[in-house]
Image (cartoon, rainbow, N blue to C red; front, side, top):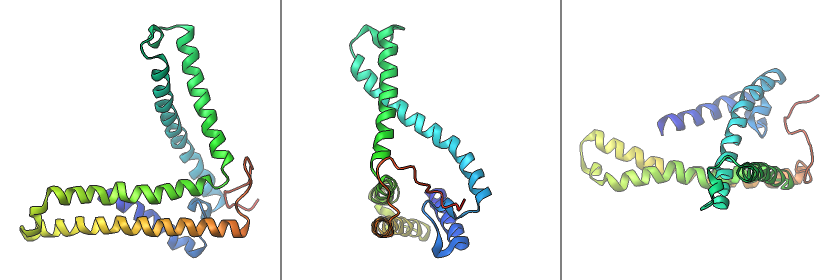
Amino acid sequence: MAIVQASYLTFSLVVYRYAGKWVTDPSLGSAGPTIKKVAYGVGFIGLMVSGCLYLHVAAKYVFVRILRNSPHLQKNSLIHWGTWLSCTIGLGSLAFIIAQAIPIFSYLMALTGSVCFAPLALSLPAWLWLHDHGDYKSGSLAKKAIYCLHCFTVLLGVFVCVGGTYAVISSIVTAYDSGLIGSAFSCADNSGTVH
């Protein structure tokens, strides 16, 4: 948790130090054109791998549900491969359509992150630790410090959830007011780079 929190905090502080209140969304848009191209080029590989992993897991789930109790589940047959390719191509196409059909999809992803990440990745683990280690409250000074640190992490998660949700909602309202929200399937440039 300390490494995750330090990473998020370091990235945020460095971006805010150099971009200030003019930071773009996504924040990489605040970098210069060359740095942006290099960073997106490096990040694109991880993005593709992540997308393929998520698509594979979802397609595998649907594939097994369709061919359960069938000899074609593990047989190298036309039905096996036809079903597998239909699942991957169909789910990939569906994901693309959903991502492009909803003009505020990136804002919805940010909202999901603020509502789900902070409680599940920050508050809940610390809260569960507090439940399991209640005796630390009255232990040695080191145990009391660890207990207080976990209490702080619970409060930090609540703050990030509330603050992040407020910030995303404010961003959505601002984006609608300024006309940044395009229409469905628009190919608008969101890189923040002036050509």
